Length: 228
Image (cartoon, rainbow, N blue to C red; front, top):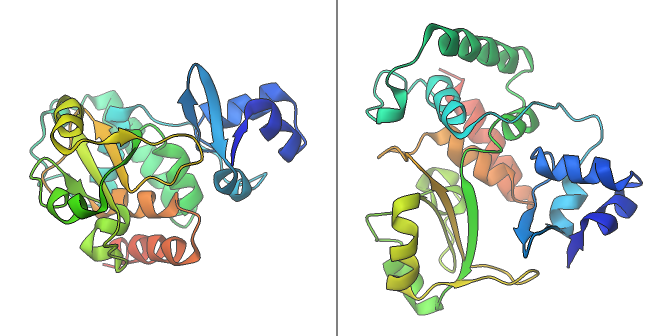
């Protein structure tokens, strides 16, 4: 059941201004519907007061952080990496050091990457899911990524260029999921999506899900990235 800002404030025992800030800053995931914020009960239940906070980075800086932290910096070909100013490099190194000092905290990672893409939720015919997964415009992530160990046959989660969203919706007859309705297609729309999705992004998508298996898979991916 989706919660409004007043309902979220009552659930968390905070004022409405604080509740709205938590959603707008990415500390609690929400969706804007008809000009107002709605928060799924599962997302509200994940919020922990005092959890490591981080000011969400812009979309560009979030991807710069991901690529650098994933050791994909030198291999990335996307235009958004060129040029990187000295100031950006300084801030990037500072954020990477802060994350390392926090023992590669997943909650901190989620806070920093809150603006990495727009989350779009759709419903599609179950029979279309296998073919939709093969669409070259999509970059599988979360439970749909092979490295997650949680491959789901009945749903798909993927990144897509914002320029391709409307065409995908038309081509596959995707219908926007209503509040409280379970979506079987989750698209993360961004301006620049690397041809090979960094595993840190996959980990972030898994960590945003409420299930214990998804949470553990996210932690395992983060550990694997920094084990080398």
